[in-house]
Amino acid sequence: MKINKQKGGVTLILLIISILVIIGFVIYILEQDKTIGPGGVEPEHGSISFSTTSAKKDIKQGNVYGIISENATGIIKSVYTKNNKNYMDIDYVELIKCESESSCPNGNTRISNINPRVRTFEIPWDVNITIQDKSNLDLINFKKIFSNDNDYRKFGLWNVLIQNDLVVNVTENFRP
Image (cartoon, rainbow, N blue to C red; front, side):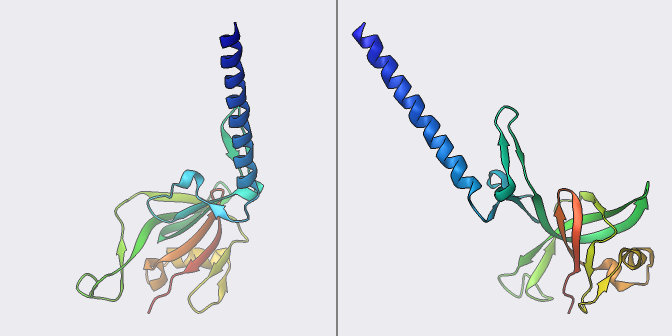
């Protein structure tokens, strides 16, 4: 009988310690002012961050709530309106810094596009769009770029900021 009480007591102490460690970890994560990748995982192209300052953990469902942000560079395939909503189709690329001139004959960076997947995101009317000369465009004029085959910007690289599957910022990538 004495042995069973000791085993039960040790188990209870270990359980309490485990719960305190988990609570301490959750408090530590929620108090951080920086963004971290969800589970430390980044996408193939671009980077995803999860804002822990607004996160809440639903332990029963295993869901994490908060703002999911994604910064990416890509080639915008089209910008269009469908069912009174605006959308952008973008093919992400990766800019790779070259180690030698022989691997990048046209400069110090090369473009890699190993994943051909084209992603579609909604764009609000008030999206912030900045072109290379630092001027801003409204969404109507931005759409005109991608409907005109003679506009060189249609074939360039664009940096996009996406929050919760909604494009909030588009910037034309530097072109020498």
